[in-house]
Amino acid sequence: MKHLIQDLWTLTQRPVGPLVDHLEPFANHLLEQGYCRRYIGAQIRVAAYFSRWLQSQSVSATDVTQALAERYLQGNVHRHSGAIKRGEIATLRRLIHSFTTQRHRSTDQSLGRANADPADGSFIWRLSSR
Image (cartoon, rainbow, N blue to C red; front, side, top):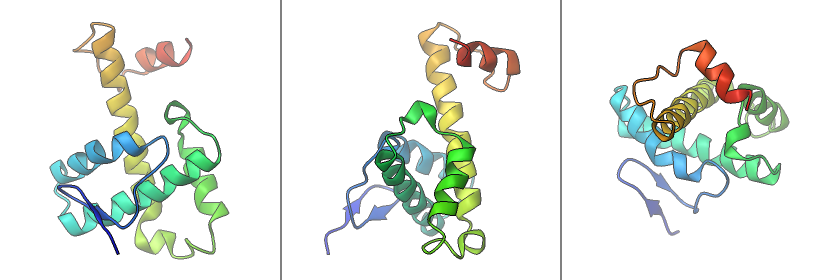
């Protein structure tokens, strides 16, 4: 069995889907939050499965929402029967929050707004109304 190894996580298959480029930043975010490598790896696996599902549904990274995460978990009940116990719901919430924050920072920088607060509701509304 061949493993793909990153600094903080290991997967047995190459990740695919719209969130692949966000797995490493998510792992770094978890490390900054104090998660140990074991739990970071488990959360990255959940994120990689979700990314693969998003690809199968033709969903782009910019269209990822909590509602999609819930649909993913509901549609994979046979695989995720212990999703709450294993923390997969919380993992996907953290992933989406991290991804959204990262996306807003990138947009802020491209607009020359390095000091903008992504939690500012009016700024988020203006971004999403484009």
